Image 1 (cartoon, rainbow, N blue to C red):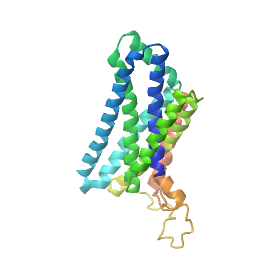
Image 2: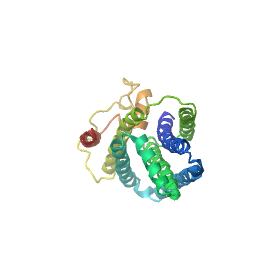
Image 3: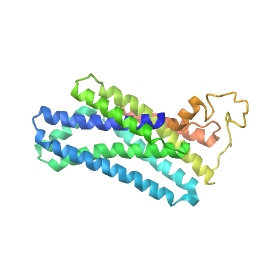
Image 4: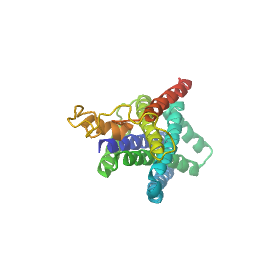
Length: 270
C-alpha cells in the first residue's frame, strides 16, 4: 500500500503542479478565457492514461504462456521510457519558467489547441509514468493496492490546492530534484527485475544463482526479520526499489550498472 501511495502521490502532485502553474499564469496575465482548454487537455490526458492501463492488462493476459519473457521485455521497455522522462526532468531544471514560457508562446500565437495539447502531454506523461511504475509493483509483488494509489492522488490534489490557492511557499526545483532521485532508484529496480525475468526465461545466464540469501525458509530462524522480502523493511524496498533477498549476480550487476550509467549521463546536466 505504501509503494502505491508514494508512486501515485509523486506522479499526481507533479501533474497538479504543472497544471497549477499553467492556470496561475493564465490568471496572472488575465487570460482566464483559455482555462477551459487546459481543463480539456487534463481530461483527455486522464482518459488516455486509463486507456493505456487497460491496454496493458489486455496485452499482459495474452502472454501468460511466456510470462517471464513478457515481464522481462516490458520492464526493460518501461525502464527506457522512465529514464527518458528522468533525463527530461534533469534537462529542464527551471521547469516553472519553462512551463510559463510555453504557455506564453501559445498565447502569442493564438494556439488555443496548443494549450490543450500542452496540458494533455503534461498529464499523459505523468499518467504513463504512473502506469509503468504501478505495473512494475504488480509484477514484483504479485498484487496492487488501489486504495493506496487513490489516497496518493487525493493527498497530491490537496497539497496542490494549498500551494496554489493558499500561497504556501514551495521550492519546485528542490521537489523535482528529490523526486527525480527517487525515480532513478525505482527505475533501477525495474531494470534489474527485467533482467532477472529474462534470466528466468533462459535468455540470459544468472552468472551466480544466489549471491546471498536471507529469505526464509532457507533461513528458518529468520535471523533477518526486517530485511528478508516479507519483512517490514524488505517488503517495502521490494515494492519500491526492486529489492531482492536472494539476488543473482546478474541482477546485482544490472542494478548497480543502471545507477552508474544514469549518474554518468546526469553529469552532463550539472
